[in-house]
Image (cartoon, rainbow, N blue to C red):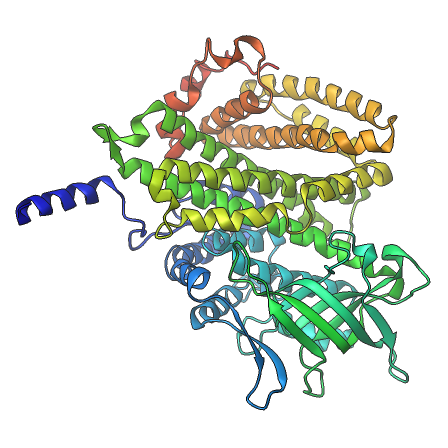
Length: 603
């Protein structure tokens, strides 16, 4: 073959196969108009301009240097354990690469934890959780493994702020909420034990009080899956009363890596875990050999406190899920636009359009639902907490964690399929996205554990009744004619849900638990549909843009499908018709959508 022919072949290959690296100057915030919409919808107006500037900076970082560091950490730069020093002493030091440390400095320095507790200098006020979660959503598009340590630091800070003593806050909360890497204390939560797993009540780690030192205990035991091993501050559950079985005998303790007298605490790392994904977070088997720990709050409330922190961690899990989903859509969309096959870009083929819009649908609709749920959680941080909001949050958090975890795995799989063989190659980001997504159905509770938690809050707090009232009030407030078919659909489905709940609660326990995930799916379908229709009504009222009504229609057809003719006949192919408007976030006029709105969703 001649040099000229070789050059031509290489040029053709390059033209047809998009390069896996992102173009310089890419920005995940600017590339996501829906994030800008949600920011304006959920943050106070006084924060809008400042938040857009900050998130635009972060969007450039996560699309550029943070993403490059994440790829290195995932493959060559995983955390490693330096078990012994040169004298043979056990130092159990966790070593991370320099790029990871730069990411720590940038993300914590941008206030992802700090601004929840300290005033933003430019605004003179603290940030609501929704702002921190906007940051987490961007970070998770490149490095969901790093977002785990951030989550654990947030949880440790939450527990100390709510239940720690003034001395504990002065000693450790300042470090947990610092923006300065040199003063930062990263956090961890160590719950899981070998014999217990999700059954935290089976934990065997014991806490013995130290004579003459009130609130100081010696902890002895093993934590079998300790995330962010090596963090300076860990919150740990240990059995404080062996007479009380299960979770009732567990107290919550703050266990620092280094004690206040600057001596190493009696903590050893047996080994780091080799994991499928999220390689940025060091996960380890931890041995507590009489480690010094400081009681947090009341001794009988340890599990209760940790359950509150678990709600926060579950929200972070959902944030990581939608972040991965967004990146999967972004990569698939860009690839399909550039990749040519059979004479034209593959995003011009109806089947590819359907796959891309399906990716967008799950991502945008679930993102809206997650931030709607976070608005409830933000209300709980006020001093006037309503019982209804508390019950609603405890229901919605496991529902959205469950749904988004499943969707993240599915979305990354779809993105790989759109890439074809290239999607399976480690030079592209898609294999890492898939590996990282897999843990999100496991972290902070599997689907079975989440379903049991949903049952518990239904039985104890009648959260399903609060849920029904909330939905009925929401749809009663819809005014636009385009919203009315969905209001009727939700009323009909709510009646079915309530009938099913009433029936289920009369059955034996095994039957109830067998059907719990079916019930959860119905509830989250209804909630998520109500969120996207609320967004659609808001956007069409403010901007005359009916684009989100298309998503609402597609969502209703997907989750509440007509059983007639198996979806083959009389399908308007809205995802194909409005493909460009959907994926490019273009305006769909009221008049244009009115021509389609006569086709109403039916069960």
